[in-house]
Length: 277
Image (cartoon, rainbow, N blue to C red; front, side, top):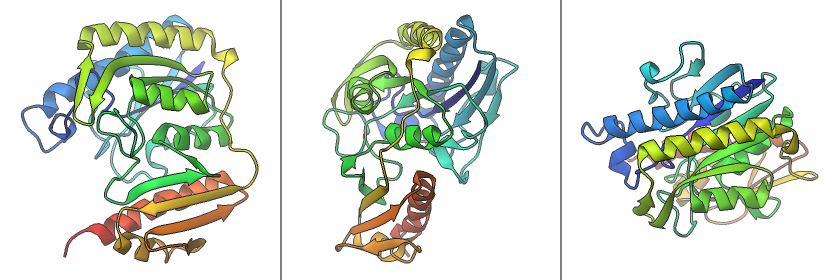
């Protein structure tokens, strides 16, 4: 069984502030990147009990080089580094039998979800596909669905797992913390979280036949509300986008892959517009 893992950090046990997952923080970040790495290791070890063999990990948090290689099995491969063309699902099109999303967080605007945002909070205020609000897990699952890859497991806080199961009812979950608000949580210890993730990963792989690729029905109507007018000004320049309001834009396509690529381009160009001179 060939397994793809996209790993984020905000959904890691104990994380409840940006300082803990900001690579420029020299005190707390080193602690929690190790916790993140050990959660990924727990997911791999659990998956392998149930038959996973070939594992590719995409480090998908912040600058995308957070994982500590000495915490990982020697025979996995890791995608590291920022500005991968397909971002959090880079190389997800290479014939995988299933995917895990570890350390994921709620979509922007989600109540009681620690550090909730959608890709880039300085650029994206909201993104909807065919009228439905999407978090990162749903957007990324739809990308993998283009290549017939089902998401088997997601780990994070309760809001993230509930939000994702609403769209992917078959997905297995490992809830490592209960969010109290945006900056607080009632969390398991890292050791307990690793045990939970290990068991959930084993179960997810063992029952992978019950999971299916996620796809949006019909043509794609993507609506983006930018975080600021200046971001929308630049996103509008991307071919295919039309301006529908001061901060609002629309992209329509018969192909989700085209819409996803347009979304990533919008983030990149919008981020540049958001930077202060």
